[in-house]
Image (cartoon, rainbow, N blue to C red; front, top):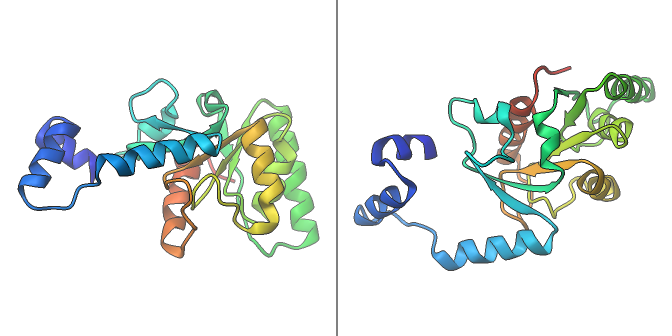
Length: 192
């Protein structure tokens, strides 16, 4: 992992040099430049571990993500955050309860984090667009998933904060969702 490489080699530059010496593939400089340009085109930017805009609770993880792609107000992650997540195929009553809970949490000063999924997650974001919401996504910040939440994802990026570990343009895959879930829990003081 990134943290293990830094502990072993002392710096990212030394780690890259050592990996190249071992014959391990290392992303070319052009790849990084394309990723930076894609983030900018999507209205996002990269935040590195250790920078002031990096979510402070996420930085406390044993092995935090070294790089995040963010769209929106990164300062929201420094405020008190609680996660509100649940079933994608929630009942109408469940979705209504999630919306009410999110609104109450927002009114009490909490920023609400969730996973941009249909069902409970979508209601959590809808309920806190005006008070502060953080959407954590499994793909790139420029890829709406599920597609029916495209408008909501755009609103979260404009009015709240959208976070991803994945490069722009990345289509979410099943293996990405545990990382997305780690972001949700990692920025939050607790999970509902």
